Image (cartoon, each protein chain N blue to C red):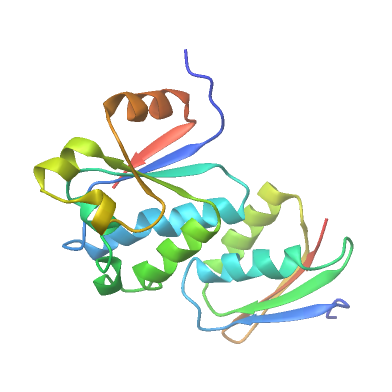
Length: 124
Length: 77
């Protein structure tokens, strides 16, 4: 039975190859933070690429601020970034050296717990 | 008739979600009861400000449209 802590989770499964799907989770997340709604962003599949230093700097979706700007606001406002461990390892990414500050590598049980306790989960 | 206000914030030309993010920062800096006048050009800012004030408890005193500008008067809770 879920606890429903009112948190929303935005799962980002697309990376720099899809600027809109990479950007919109952070648009919603920063608006949620501004609205006092607890929020978590998860990176899976190619979304894990966005956690790499220097990646978001190249992502621009029409009609939105630059992704780098949104990620900075999200993290400065206390936002958490959970990154799928197997997706990172299969891409041979050295997360300790390559990831932005605030990105945390987690595995399935962590995601399962967060999802079971959230009010809503949206996948991009 | 425009409401009296204590601070003014111009979000003209800013893309979603920046009007909301900047409004939150400006409202948080007010004293309780003070009013922010916020101007935006994004048409989505009207439902956004309505949703944001409903969620945070700040009061949207009034809103008006002047040409392409959406003007909001928000009272800090």
